[in-house]
Length: 85
Image (cartoon, rainbow, N blue to C red; front, side):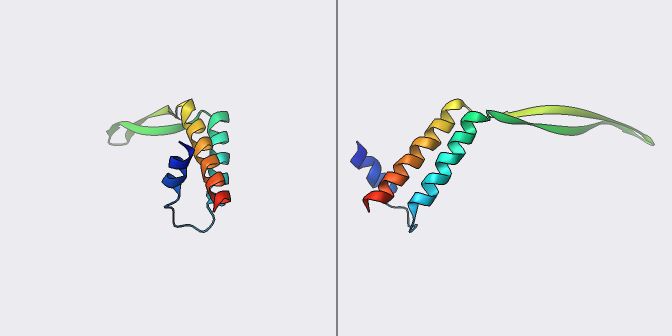
């Protein structure tokens, strides 16, 4: 199975896959530590002449926990694949 994963990442035409792997590992750790973030949006509700009513709403943008784990595993695979070359 590890050989199949090596073939999967061996087509990447970048000289140093180790760098991309390390970046993926760092992003994965960040995704595990920070499960998402909040964004404040403003929506115009009423606009009648000089009267304007706006609605502010907080929206949560999150990702599943396993996405960080997948990024870490992909980064580790790229680091190991670069080491084998």
